[in-house]
Image (cartoon, rainbow over all chains, first blue to last red; front, side, top):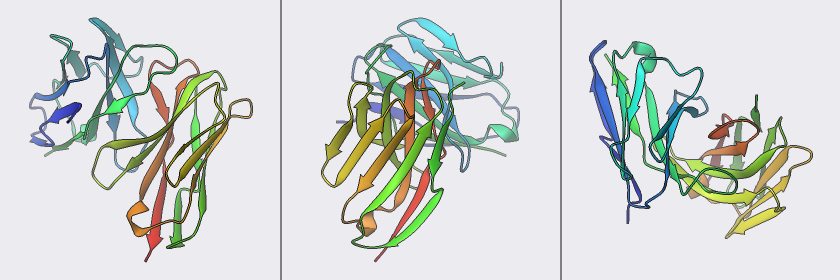
Length: 114
Length: 112
């Protein structure tokens, strides 16, 4: 029944070592989002894909990249993780952009940087 | 830039009480508002979605209201239970942002 799946649930990486987080969805939604949530803070949008169209938030660091090879999968790549990148990373989907569409969230991946 | 504020930041009440969580947003040009629940170390569970044209939504013991013109929403929880203990997040879609803009949440503890 899982609709938005994130792997792994917990990821430990070393300072500066590239890491990739994965998100997949069974909803066939056009839009996929990546949010970052640091401890005791509000989730913050990093970027989103509308179909194959990539949309980066203005304040998302260049260290963060994303790929969407097909409708079902989306990846978050952190090229050189720093200690400040330790956070919960949340993937979400919605049927399309624009008004009224609910966002569905995955369980998140908690990233630790040592 | 849209900003979302949630009051109170934390709340502790005895089991059985009815309670209200508050959310305010600065830009009233929103498409919808969602309330989420987040358990410690976990992802987000959607509780209620209110479209901008709606005034309220209900699901079981939960009732959410929206006053778009004043930039406010409330989440009412009836007959609270210890299992309701979690952080409740309010998020709006619209107001110039491409995704949801979240508040920091209200950390709720229901005492048995």
